[in-house]
Image (cartoon, rainbow, N blue to C red; front, side, top):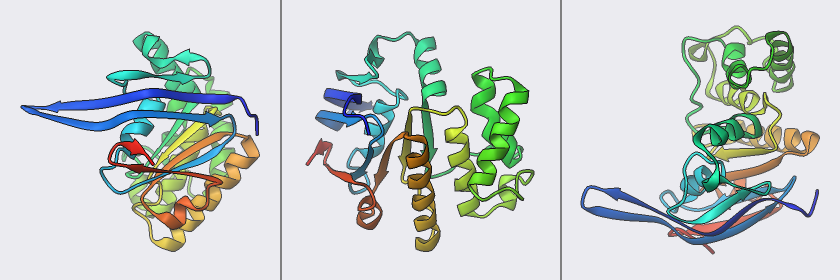
Length: 225
């Protein structure tokens, strides 16, 4: 693992306005993540973990403070540049999978690569290799409704890795799975991360899952404890 930080958050605040109500989700959060590191953000529901992941991955921007990804200030990038960065350098894995129901497993996996304009004859073999690697070599043409929750999450992992990202952000990746399947998913994620030297940040409320990471940071009421 390289000691150079790939991701830095400095004095980040995030507040949402909901009608007459002001909801302060993150307060003065600062964080540095080394290239190739595996970090778990542990906290209860509503603590601010998902919001922090969204800011770190450029899905949202802070009201105050800054997020630096590989020496680029995300708040200073144009909308197009930020979209390209997310697509090509960041892989997202969500609790709810977010697979398109009308597409097969392999079609879901190749979506980010096609958005990045990777040639079809390049991306399809890459998607097949990834699906085989996550144990779905025989399920590539199945649609999400034909797959179990664990299998759908494996498709989501392959999709997150299709553009060979520098950073993978996993938001409660085992939240909809039983403990055995969840453990298999975490083992798969950590193995793939080691093989590819990818930086992995995972948000979870589960202390057992968080303990699989070499570094754990607790998120409490919008602050890092």
